[in-house]
Image (cartoon, rainbow, N blue to C red):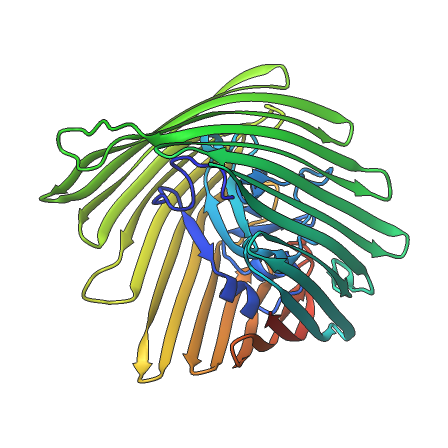
Amino acid sequence: MDLPLTSQNADAPAVVSEQRLSAETLRRRGGVLTGEAIGDWPWLRGSARGLVVSGLPGTLVTLDGLRLAPAASGVVDLTLLRLGLIESARLSAGAAGVAQGAGALSGVLAAGGHPVAAGGRLLAAAGAQDGRGIGAVDLQLGNDFGWVGGGYTRGGALPGGATDQDRWHLAGRFQQDVGPLQLWGRGMFARRAHGVIRADWHDVALGLSGGTRWQWRLAVANGGHQEAAGASSRLAQARAVLSGATGLILPGAAEPITLAAGADWRRLRLGAGVVRARELFAEAAVPVLQDKPAAENLVATLGVRQAWLAGKSETLWQAGGRWEAFPGIALRGQVARGVDDFATLSGMSRSVGLIATPAFLPGFALTVDRRWQAQGAARVQAWDVSASWRGRVSGGAQLALTALATHHDQAAFTPMPVPRFASLLRATLETGPWAVSAGLRHRTALAGGLDVSVERQIGERVRLIASVSNAGDAGSAAGPVGRQALLQMVAGF
């Protein structure tokens, strides 16, 4: 169900600054809301009830490759995207207009939904936040073909402090083989209520795919966001993608050139504004040199998208490459152009970086990227650094260390304030059925602070997680509202 199937999909080597969040990380963070779980990451800033890259507008949020409907403000309301529905997340900075279309001007938060064949699961949580009780329950029933589930959350944070708000959600996913074809679908409905203040959100998608050497995928989706005060949004979209290997191999390469091409259509209504978009795109991943001295793997990526939106014609493009000079050492870079959903703002992004996974340090990985982004008068220059190590420290214990940091040399005229330096350090020790995790933040979207969690596996199907962490609205610029203590139980059946 992972869309789009292009050279920029989740399995392709990234050529822009990128950070990935696993299911374990999301769970151990101890958040009730999606924004609490991912708000630690240094380059994300708060905007309304969502998150944006480096304070710039145009951060697209997708689920399984299909964009989610934003609120009337233009930002996806992460308080309505249930954290329990997300299996993983990938954050990238830089224009992604060729892969995703207009609107992906500053970056993409690409979430992956809970697997289709995940079976049954009970997720329950209880605790306190800023002196008020909170709780959540999420029941999922499923088999190899899909699942249905629903849940309720009591409490949570708003910019003014913790409140007695309620959140309900219903969701489901299915996947079925129909001869040589694969039919899949998903549906999500959520409501947030606090007194007379209410918001409703829905997302429904259906897709069909097939092919062997050349794979094709068709998908349609409809989503919307409605506030009780009358502000609303609605997104209808359709996508067709064809991709595969051409069989053409350059003289110095060992693998063939792969191509992806497709078309997108969507109708987006934000408040009183409506925009219709028609887009055609093509991408190519071209292996240039492979298995050569000083060129273990050199791959170039090229892409172009022609968009007709808001009565304008816009050309989006990207060019990048990844050069693995020696095993474990690679350079990457990209330059790209993007536009916003209404074709009123365009932007350019550039990125160059280093990826190091040296063989003499098993389990260690380092990325260092230099990023430049420009949108109108706004200018951002930043260093993005990610380092991680995972290894065995004794016969039955493993230690995982992660360090993330973003240093903004320049952040001029950005709509949201951006700190000069933000970072996250996290350590996790796993031994037998136990796992202990601690994270220390410095000026992230949830400000500074320490979070600690202790996880205990009980048998094969039950897991308990106790955590203490910062609490806050999902990306609110007001920052955290206090400490949150949470006890979670995850039971599979």
